[in-house]
Image 1 (cartoon, one colour):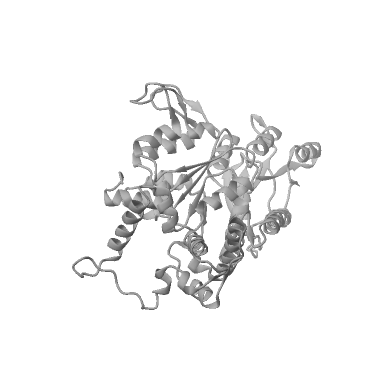
Image 2: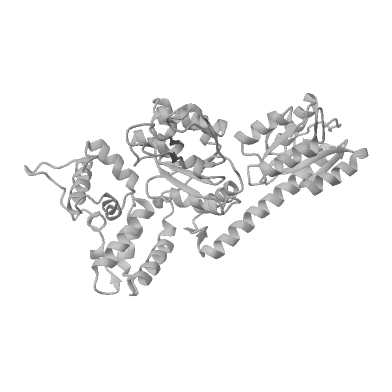
Length: 469
């Protein structure tokens, strides 16, 4: 992009609100660096590539919103580069740079999918105007998307319920992530709805018609996770009586959601990293590699940075998955949404059971005061349990779990047979094991009644040495 750029003066950052990233593709180092610094001075994150191949690697590993592309690149056609970018990374908007004698090329670029062009030589002010106009365009697209989803979901986004400021921020990130093909790491406590966020990203984006395949890394036996993800050939191990296609291959252009990625064994983490980087897998027992086309979404309730420091999670895989990072807030940080969630769940339960339900004022007060360690899942389970046991239509505070009604000090501390007060961890263990025993070993039902995820239940049983319960 052999162009004259005006000196980079310090200017106010645009209110883009999208944390937009700009990638400059130019073989001229001085121009490349000038454009990158100009974009940074305007408030954008900025990357630079000296060749199409370098640019493709950055597009694969980074969330790029805008590409500044020089049309005249040595050894290749800028139009061909533009075409490949729009085919492989359709969410990225492209601005092409062209000389006055190449207006025809600029027109062709616009027809191929470029958002705009900058005629050489261009000034800093011209670059600012184009980038800010594009930032406004992208922001408007995101806001329109959120508005459409709110209309469909009434008080949320893509089926997620909540209107608190923390949720509004999450919706903006989901809308941005939905238009990208990059890996996304979803962080949040158990019961906050991380899988619902993953489904929203998938079904709100261009991959919505392709498969969405959830994989619970915490509940699968470690020796079987590799076979589930990569597949195996007949005779690969004892019991492999026929060939099996792996989930990463079955996705076929869709999304694989790796729930509780922090529970994945370290040796398998290396194989997953290789599959993501090389876009191919090798089934267990096979000598041949199979190309894959899949987007990876991952979630965990663990502190992965701490797991990396402890050697329990690979640093390179963490950075590869953490291209986009979404945090799902716990329910205690958005208490104003409890009323919306209660209304949503009671409306659904009323339809399911065929009877209208409501909450007494004191019962609602208890719900609003409670800290909800199990988050939205615990709230849903609490209301399901109350609706199942009452004979009237109004839920009283006495119909709520003792953990809520006893929160004010009325309940006696739990003890063992000798009168010794039990620790919280021991109470939790006894509650889980006794519930499973009462349900004749039905772990999925036990998890539902306890208000915890099945992944959490399996992990707890593993800690207790009771996997076979």
